[in-house]
Image (cartoon, rainbow, N blue to C red; front, side, top):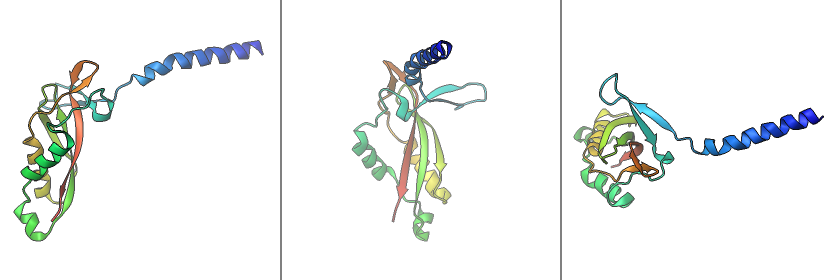
Length: 146
């Protein structure tokens, strides 16, 4: 009985010591932006202390997308609408890179236009972990409605 109680107490102490470490785990993925041999650690948007932000905040981002987005002629004539879900990386200098379509709209011209709009974005404020700037992956939907 005493042996079992000692085992339970030891197990509880071990688990409680491990909990603060688990809270510090960051979700990091690797991206190969240039070649097969260079990799960069990229933090996920929800797991950084300070998230990257578009100049002017969320309202500024919406205004930028609405001003920059041009409906592709082919899709407009056929009445094609959709939503393109894209991901990109905000680097430690605030520049947008590695733009990709996660889920396309079904029309390639809408997908290309979403990539073009994101590629034209100005520098963002950088994401930080502690006091250090880190590259952060951002996921952004671009809507096309007639």
